[in-house]
Length: 140
Image 1 (tube, rainbow, N blue to C red):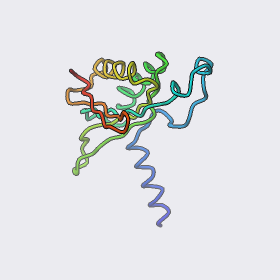
Image 2: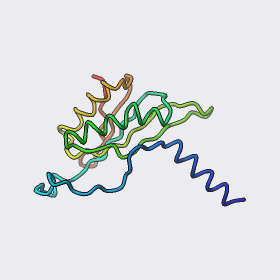
Image 3: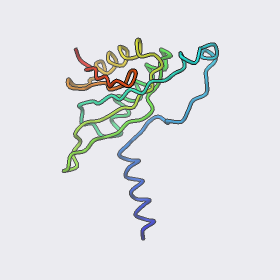
Image 4: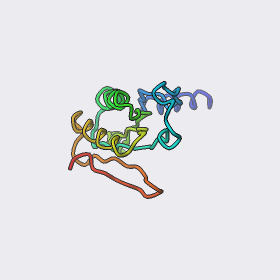
């Protein structure tokens, strides 16, 4: 009986996450072979999006197109996402986990793409630089 509950609980967590991308490490592409260690450092960026779409819709609306844009630019990828729920079970907001190789060019691309994809005002990007938390609004 307990084992069934654990499996069910894990299934719910996976369903709520709705991650469309794997967080597993990727092979180094030929273009990255000549990069220095400093250039290969990946920065974690969390997009807190004030939208109430379901986990499946989150992947189609935000995660997949954003990951495609980052990969085409050679700047990173989406590694996951999640859903914050209210006590009544309704969706409060959604989150997207992003790995960015270069914050200087990656953050403007992510902001621009999220606006293009319809991220509502109040959405923010959260990351750290030299152990200092940074929060950047998606909209100016």
